[in-house]
Image 1: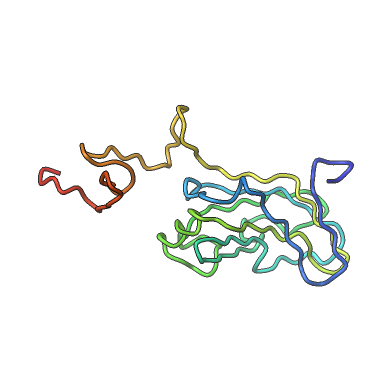
Image 2: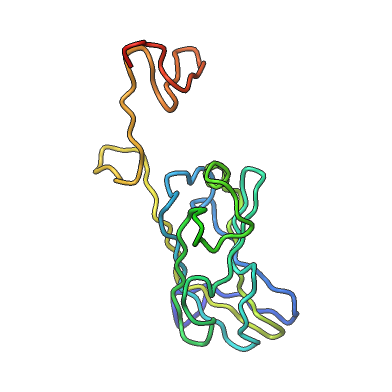
Length: 178
């Protein structure tokens, strides 16, 4: 933690990049963050300030996607704090590589095991992370999140994909009137 600002930092004397790793609150089932924004406020001191292809790394569900910081249409990291924002989806204009299907991107987010942010950019580089924001939803009595699908299951069914009492699932209910 920096003495002057509310930020964490990583300093390096090596050329290989170091990464900030997200704590548990940002990991696990983040499927309700699909299509929403992930933002960081970040700055670097010293070192070459060239963004790479793997400045942001998401891993989960046996999948891995990466994005460069510059894909958020913000300038390269410098001594002044910059906010970088990424939408968590697989759409054609999305910066995530490799390109994966809608199903796979949702699978990745439903079991997010690692979220890493590149901290250093060259020898004797220091990266300062000031804030991280992930828009998500959680079950509860509060107002509903408009981006989360809502399902009213037919009588005798419950949960996602019309789950039947004993844990069996069907994509559609068997009621011929549906």
